[in-house]
Length: 293
Image (cartoon, rainbow, N blue to C red; front, side, top):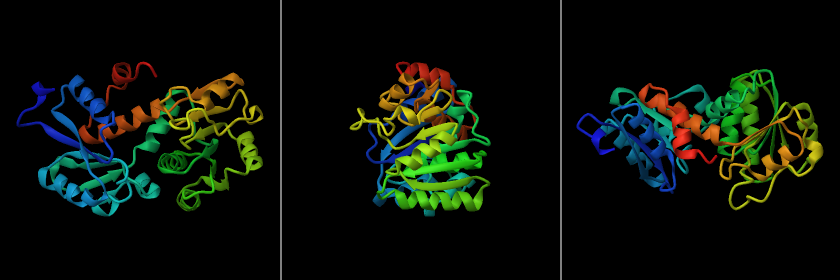
């Protein structure tokens, strides 16, 4: 990397805490190197208390952009100058651009776009589809909103009776007000309603996080009658590569069972495009960093 660093190098940052586990710096720096672009990507341990100063630092130093992760995705919004449509509807930002380093900061959310792109790459069309979505935290909210913007006809959102349930209700209200999608919300504990929704759906999306550590041996769906061969099952978890849900779906005849690696790669690729205007070499990054997935 050092041969690419000089007085012309442009900086992209990642602001979050904890952050040292993130694969984003490696992913972006390898892509910059592959394309011989004059950028470097660095992670900074920044929480809510430091966020305003960090954003001011982006303006002052001419940092060209930043990824934003937890716990800053909502807190960053009032510090920005502009939001794109999906970020505004989602109510969270994971990508900020500072075009030409002039200090005008625009917020985006690439999580939902990444999910839609991952589905499209698998030949799955969301336009006019009926979709069941489980989990309405950060990822689920982004998927719900972007899916609605991309033409989902009916969206059935299910969430546990927990702190995220009011968010699910709010998300459905915004979707119904701002898009042509008809969104409904139900408690995940209502299994009869879940089965009815899945029977009507062509796509089931699990954004609950069940299936990743420490819940890697669990699945939201444990009854094979909820599944059928032509149902697309998409789990946002990518580690492990095959969750209990995906394993169960395949064992019971589901033809398309997709993990979250594509979503993770494509949300990064969309952010990369915002930062530098170039297409991330996704296949190269996949092979280099995630070939076991």
